[in-house]
Amino acid sequence: MKTIQENDTDFICDINAPCFHMLSEPELSLIKKSNTQVSFRKGENLTKQGTYASYILFILKGVAKQHLEEKDKNYNLKLLIEGDFIGLSTVFEKETYSYSTIALTDTQVMLIEKETIENIIRNNGSFAFNIIHRHCAQSEILYGAIRNLMYKQMNGRMADTLIYLSKEEFVPYDIFTHLTRKDLADFAGISTESAVKIIKSFERDGILQLKDKRIVIKKKDQLKDIAEKG
Image 1: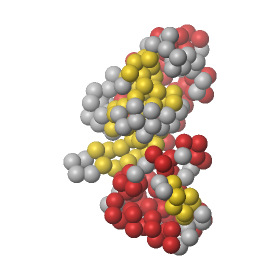
Image 2: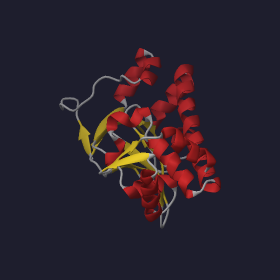
Image 3: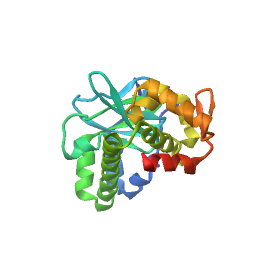
Image 4: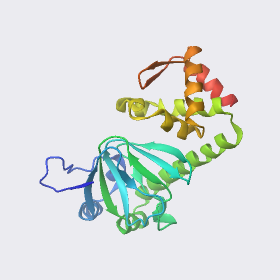
């Protein structure tokens, strides 16, 4: 982890994300005064499950992976890219991070004091609506993960995982090159061995094509059918 100063060439001076366009000039000034820019190298933790949260993180550049840590196994929740917040739940309910976040690529973030975000939410309805929308989307992902684990068999879980990771928003990041087979297994909630077998079976059926670490979906409708039937 490295703090980036304003005179560093890597410093990103503008707040271009759509959510910040809703802020007034005084609110923007408050964000700029209360934030610190930090760069994380690939493999470093941005947040650690259970640790105290004094900051909300906002991703300026890079890709990160959010996951739950258990004694014997991790469960991957989602990917985070430029424009995503980390730790919003700590504004509303908890003092500690509910999950860990790890950089899949070199990643640059803004650390924004939690109190600053909380004050702006209280006074800016449009920004508050945007934050609540993001928080609800996070909840939907969690509910979806629970449904998958409870009701779907391994093929359905892996199909869901591949559909999620192939989303248009992740295409520019060539996501599969940053993920191991264990990462894919942890998204699906299955063992690495089972994940490898299922991916190979999808390849034999012509549903996808493997190119080293890359996975190219060839028959998305068939994959969706497997995901829906579970």
